[in-house]
Length: 226
Image (tube, rainbow, N blue to C red; front, side):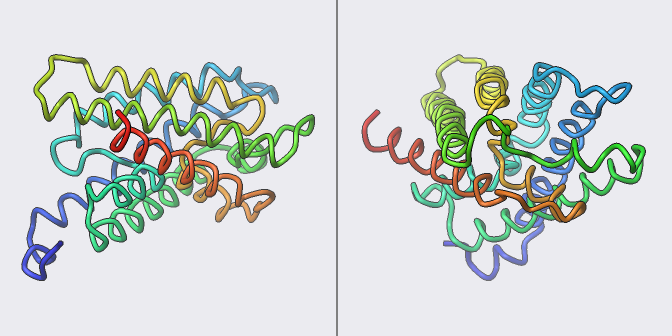
């Protein structure tokens, strides 16, 4: 458990700041890559690659500080598998949500306002429904977090494996798989920031319950079965 002395330490607040900065960067990159060109939305591959490449760099930047979780679903999976104590978990969650809001606000200020609102928010495809979107968010986040746990396990056993690349590829795959149905959020903070700025909350619960449930299932599955 996190002690009061550790709570006041510089190391703890470096970890919190790393989660804030990492989430800010990730959300900014994804939203920037999702910006439409000449009134036409970019293909799904563009934000997916941006997210994956950003994740690779963030693991190298902040992995040794806070683990570069930059995703509330991942943080909650670590809590449920006892890899993270409760106070540190809450601190990371608040930092991630704040970072996402700051990242969204930055893009909202920089990009043309009349075009940004509709493309910043995760939406469910009109041809699908909330249940289908929820299922895809669960599945896509499951495979992402399962990969993260496997990478962490390899690192503990000092297995020579390019962990950051595996995580980046998994994130790209998850967004591509779910993108046409649920916009491929896989990260509640990424959905929260734009929703707060634009006031668009339609089916927002899908982008919390889906990733969190998928992440927790992945963490528990890896820890207890694999």
